[in-house]
Image: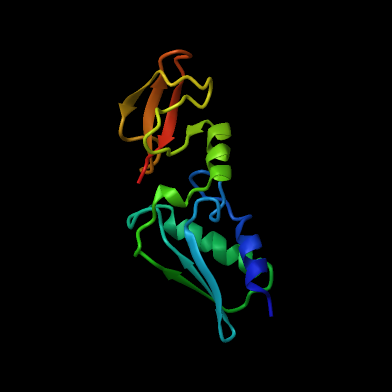
Amino acid sequence: MISVEQVWQWLGDVPDPEIPVLSVIDLGIVREVRWDGETLVVTVTPTYSGCPAATVINLDIEAALGKRGVEKLRLERRLSPPWTTDWIGPAAQEKLREYGIAPPVVGAPVACPQCGSTRTETVSQFGSTPCKAAYRCLDCLEPFDRFKCI
């Protein structure tokens, strides 16, 4: 039988389809991995209940695990507790910054991921995906997305 720890490692290679620099593990949406008899159960909490990428994420998880020999898989969707950006760890926040997206940091000024300036302004609460808002740096004048704090 494949170990739960091994499955967690494999899921660390499954990229988020909207932010491919992050894995589903980095994003914090995989909440549980366990065996129920001969069936592997992976519990996923989407970033929000209407997330358009949820179906693709499930298909990507199925494909990644199937490729590694998992024959019986059940994906469960858990909406409670709701996903929060607190589930994105410091290493994943750094990956976002390096990718050009300001990470979700509550109570801190929004820093430009290009130049680091905190002289930034909100352009729109609606960014390139529903999880992000559009910003502009007033120093380097570059536009960028900021992952919304949820």
